[in-house]
Image 1: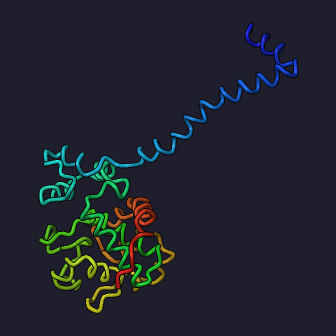
Image 2 (image 1 turned 120 degrees about the vertical axis):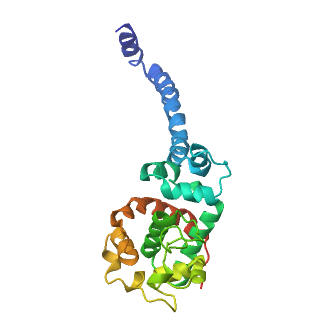
Length: 230
């Protein structure tokens, strides 16, 4: 109360008013400084723990790259752990990020709208975390989209070529018997996760949607610098 009365008397004099406002400006500048650092803190908080953290949790070498042991551990991890690991493009390994950029580049080259590129990124993230599996891990599924030679997605060599398998997913490859993205009627207005499932016909149809925001952020970050791949 004493402080309040003193302040009340002080601000009644014009010169004191100016002085008080100057002091108040200084006082309110401190929160401003803190606020300026908030975007940096928020950006840091938005990142996941990354591959090295995941590898350490599973007793693997902390290389930050996906080898066979890490790939197997990723396939067995829970959705909760995967979301802790992967939140931004920076959390992917270098080879996996390059594969994601290829998916975007093929989409650009085929003039697939950004919504379609998001759907492709969602699918690859759910199926493989952009790991290009060269040997089957589930039946005869291969590559970043886990496409199967036995169900008409192409030869193993075609499926494990990231650009070619991306064309298959988008529905612009000159081979294969399965409908790709652009063959799904009304895909532009469907929920993205439903489109993923329409192409993939997965036993777990509801799991694609969880990666939509990751895919949108990935495209926003990497897309502008990716050239079209014909």
